[in-house]
Image (cartoon, rainbow over the protein chains, first blue to last red):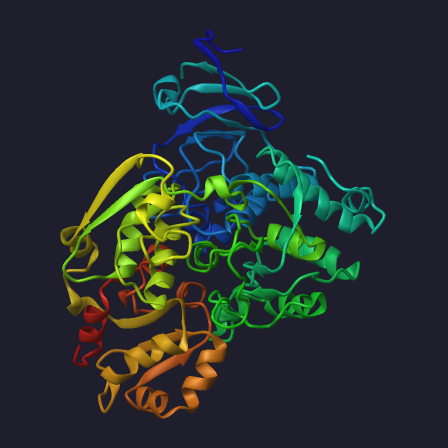
Length: 153
Length: 385
């Protein structure tokens, strides 16, 4: 393991599994449908790039990252887009979200039940999440226990 | 989650492996939100209606459902067509459209092909549990009709339709349908779609209660659609207008968590300042109803549009409007009538970069659009507003 463990805390486990990666953090809710249905989204190497011009993560790639954000917004296509990203190898390593909603959960449940592919999701409501995790930090997540370990990036 | 014997049997494969996977999807979905049971639904609405070539995992699941001969157990409607026949590029990008439509037919889905399914086709009563996808339709079902649905994802809709169940959590439960945020209005010239966009941005996923304003059904539809694009609102109330909010006292259990005031300036800030750039004008998102098209028709009477203009309407409304005297005057003015989804249809387009729309939902999703009020749009069309 690189570096020294800086922080360890626990959220509410939503989807099981282990995941590790570099954090990608935003305080803006994400509209997955707007983010992943633009023309370039259908090119294989662009499948995990956020293409929503309304979002601060415009042009950022979520693949293998630990994505930290407040909530999902927008269309009910979210589950389908997540399912597609996961089954085509563009999935994040884990998601830490302030409020896990029906759309986020469905995308991962669908991919788990029908394709045996999934990643952990932890719900962590308090605002201090943005103090605890910064973009670039190394984050390890245990979706069974809700444990989150952050090593400064 | 506690299942009854019939549900347990479906989960354990007594009705086949595919049915069992559909049940497992709903059980896991509900478990993530501590749902205690699955409830019977009275209708479903399916959102995944665009046959985009890339979403192969979706077609894989649908194919397994159709091959196993599963059919919907409740009346089920479906979202718009994507304008796949509009031009060659769309035909290539949406090359799974025929497969999708054939599959829906085999599953017994009603071919209404509109997001405004609640316009005379799929109209649940107050209090009925339903499983709808399509964020704007969810808004309408919950807020305007008083039916109960969560913001279900694409494919959760189909799993619910073929099993007849949905997990009971969130907006299926009365205690989660109460007001959370009070919205006050300081608006001189109402624009429901823009108002919805701003409310969605500010409340994100809470339940807003808007102080009384006599919104029409059409305005409620467009406001709800916008709120669910810029935010994740599944349910809103309007004091003294929507079914669960006869007055402020009965919709709030306690003091509002927050009080927002939306002003005329907020609405004006959303509008484009420069109509001269506009290359075309699009009306309808969610789909225009007949009522809405008739309301606009008068402006086009005897006129001739200055820029390409289209109405995107429910297929049923389009058929009726085309035949009517009003509709013929609108098309004589140069307006094109479509029944596809503008967002799907116009994503690929040549030139025509600055489309002007009076739908804040369309503005959010369709790259290269500007927002204008109805009056702005009519001005861009070159007709008197």
